[in-house]
Image 1 (cartoon, rainbow over the protein chains, first blue to last red):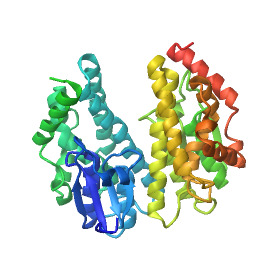
Image 2: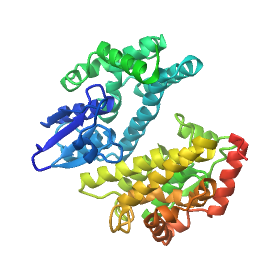
Image 3: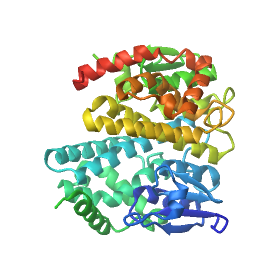
Image 4: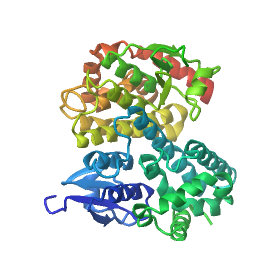
Length: 224
Length: 224
């Protein structure tokens, strides 16, 4: 991979996992080459070679060496470029454990529930809707009156969750509910995050995200 | 929680996630109070208060503060007691990212497949069997000829995987296959790990584990 630039991100525009990496790189001010991957028709040889285990984006190539799995990538970025914008609290193992706990919660609950919300129908979809609201309320409770999840500074948990906010419109349309009604603090936090250049330039328009999700629902899961 | 000792582990004897924490504490030589939890009949008030989000073991209480999720706990133990037996490679962000990738793989694939193996029947169970063998072979390929996953030293990925080795007998009985036939290196690695006191004193007898799994299969999933 000698012909590759120093930092390359293999990604797909709508992926919340890829968006995490892009936001982390932007927060750190790391220049990188973005390589959009064609996941729907054919995966590139570079992607298959870089992540032979999962064959999935995002993959961060740093000096030719691949790092896979979004949370591992964000933590890697934080460790390799520690100067600007620390994402996990330094010298605070307890704070780091808490941050890892919540990032894991987001992966398991928010991602899990949203997938069920658009794959399933009838009662199973209704259960997914309830579980998603419950998970968002748990995050609302954890956020409480802090500006960001880790306190005063934008960090690891914010990066883990904020890509899902451009899917809130899709959740509301598919689940017929208002996130603001249940979780006003999360909605205010999402607005605050969106004021950051790192977030604003990465997150796509919620309408386009909803359109993409509808396309996937119809083409892959036969939804109407 | 002023009446609690400095380090307390809320755990359940057969849990591979709890076993990870016990092995990590033993590797570090950290004294702690083990508190077996009754998960089948009623969860303790201490467990519910310490992990209100998931209400699950293991929970590590350190100076009264709870840390939850086994991989976050093991990483916390490594950071708080860094002197003895480093589990993640120091000063090597790439090595740490790789270790986190593989620990995540074990959680997703090995745990996911084994659960399907004993919950499901017929064709779905057969698929789980195939997926489990495939996942073990992927780990066999990653281990290659190294003594441990991280190289010369017992570390994070070994701790993540080794508790599942006392379930190998159950996998073989339920799936009618030989792990040694497919993954001789993993079996040799498991034997090497078992020579460590930290592992030997934590892992229960595979026959007892199989008995427990059969009890759960029959009582919870109606298996015969």
